[in-house]
Length: 126
Image (cartoon, rainbow, N blue to C red; front, side, top):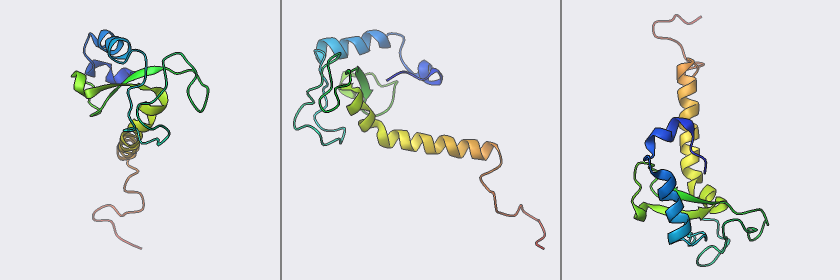
């Protein structure tokens, strides 16, 4: 998955090398997901291989590296898993929902919109 510019500083300087090693050496170009993504579309290890058509869709597979604890600073091999884009997106779906909700809330709070429909303290009601 592409790294968002605001998160780039959370990754180690050698992240490209770490990611390449996980995807090519350890995973040998194949998705390492064994169903933890929750897709329910494969029994055992996902058959998708980098650069080849994905099972079920035929779209070109892009192998990525997922942080299992969603913490980019934690680059221990045990926390990293090579995943095709489908498995990675499904694995991260709850985390993406939570961060999107937090972002929406922060935007509303910053704009003073969160308390819409409530009276400010001390305001007289008509």
